[in-house]
Length: 289
Ligand SMILES: Cc1cc2nc3c(=O)[nH]c(=O)nc-3n(C[C@H](O)[C@H](O)[C@H](O)COP(=O)(O)OP(=O)(O)OC[C@H]3O[C@@H](n4cnc5c(N)ncnc54)[C@H](O)[C@@H]3O)c2cc1C
Image 1 (spheres, rainbow, N blue to C red):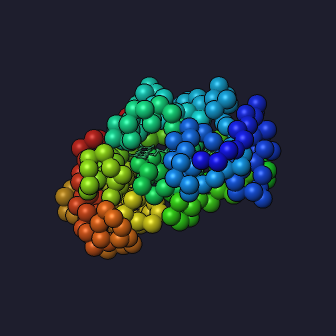
Image 2: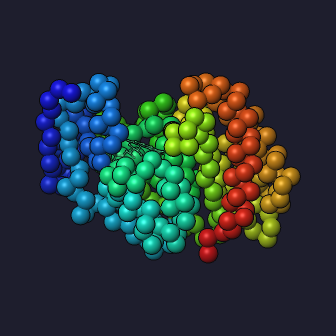
């Protein structure tokens, strides 16, 4: 690894000023778990890393919003999110998903902002947080904006963040009345990166599905929402028939890709099975009160 400069801004505004919008080798650094791997393998050679860890005191809080949702500072570690009493109460699917996300050493260091900014389609949190209707707040030289997480990813390891922009917060709406589940399938070893991730959220009123969000990751080039599966679910009774039809619609719609973990055809069949299982699990989990 070649040498680089590590700078420690005293505030988020200073960090944004330090990020050179014309130089892609100047990068923000949160937990460093993804960046360091890229640096060690020679995929990325920084000139300057802007270390955000020193801003943890102001930007790592987890709080319930007045509307009953959540605001999570971008520098919250995955472990602190996993064990937050607020997260457990408002969005229990997040701590359930964390149990199989990397390992405790990585979760202790990785930050939720770094996790989302990395743009890796195999990550577990993007499908989970987008199925909950989550958004990121982003600050940069041009000001502050909110981006729905389902629209954050523009391609394989690509996001819509522009150079100089930092994720400052993750926000989730109230989950009251919504039931959620996340399932992933690893085809090589149990702790490998997923071949497929499926996250679903359902709002069931009087036994019928009023609204849903169905997200797929890992098997597709980027995090993808599946509106045709959601259309099948809308207004249907929360029973096996609708679940099976939605799974077929998901398999027909998703553009799965070939890679070392399996062919596109194989992943399409996995998707059919896992959408069915995830919907069944969400219904069994029941709605957040
Ligand atoms: C052994 C191992 C196993 C893993 N297994 C899994 C797994 O099973 N599931 C899973 O989902 N993930 C897994 N991961 C990936 C892990 O979740 C990510 O590496 C981690 O979440 C990235 O967060 P970080 O804070 O370390 O990001 P960093 O490495 O600091 O940064 C990642 C990227 O985001 C940018 N960035 C960082 N912070 C911000 C910000 N606030 N705003 C804008 N850009 C920013 C950086 O410039 C960089 O491009 C694994 C990682 C390892 C090392």
